[in-house]
View 1 (tube, one colour):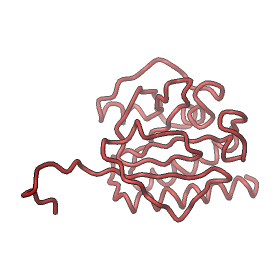
View 2: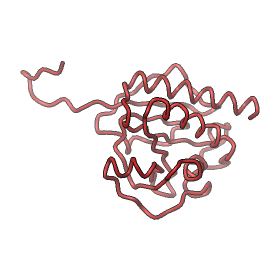
View 3: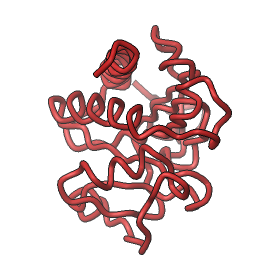
View 4: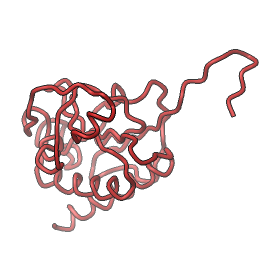
Length: 182
């Protein structure tokens, strides 16, 4: 791993650790990650995906999420309607519907393709309602978050040259003027 790749891995590790803490993610909850490896390299989204960058990011994600017990869902690009790569156990736990497609760098994205080859029992699902999300390069992950998403301002603002955006979710507040929330 060269110096640039090591920096990318450190940036992802720092961001994911902070998000897990701020969001209060618990074992078994889902973190959705969208990523443009092109943006990480300072290029236009979808123009120059990188297997190497995807490998660095996926390794960091797996290490942090495995140690905390948080499940990851890797979002594909719009060519696959932003489907997600998850472990089969996550699909079964959350009652998700599997779809038939294999993400590749040109249709799905480099990180989703990397997830297919590095997760232990990967499947592709159409949608998920994740508990938190990390968006590397503004890939639009909002459709895969629970209904009430709350922006999280991380200390880590970039991964490589890609802007980093994060969110946590919370339960809906229901009731009227007499409702108590805490």
